[in-house]
Amino acid sequence: MRTISLILLLFSSTAIFGQKRSCSFSYRKINTPNSKYTQKLVSTIDTLHLKTCRGVEDIPDFIINTLECWAGYDWSIANAGSPYYETGIKGPEAIPARQLMYMGLNDHYLLMAYKRGGLPLNCPTILFKFEDQKILDVWYWGGTNEGIQSKEDILQYCREHAGSGKHKPVL
Image (tube, rainbow, N blue to C red; front, side, top):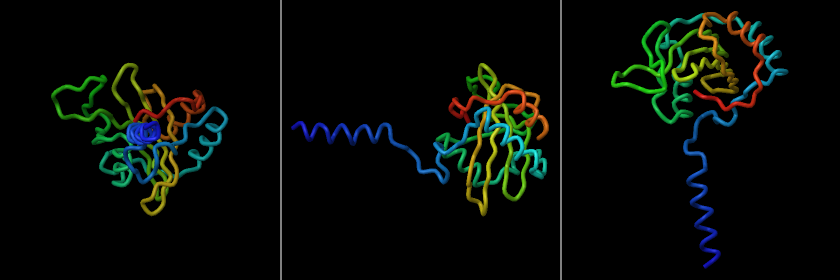
């Protein structure tokens, strides 16, 4: 009887605490740079030649699919200046929970900063490295600077606020 109870406990805990979705890039592999690594990351971003994109329709589908897989629901984002839920409470309108602040893209990288409603306002930045529509690496750092409009703004914020790397990404 004890063996059966232990087996049932093992299976039930795996079902409850195990990974619910099999995403193409695991959420657990997201890098959250610490202060030392942030300086190296800043140098890398500084050398990237990125085309500034203004519309969320420029976000590659495989990245949107990964974000939705991580979140477990329809991951929506509005263009810069468009309405979005500025608080953590959603109303009856069908508007996104996020608003794009900056996006830079090339053949291997996507750098994106956006506002996510709530108290306090959350302004995460995510850097995706990819090849052939396969995500190879992801860096995430949180912020509160809602004035980001360029790659240079992101670099300046990173230089001034090197992250601790101890927070969990809030997408």
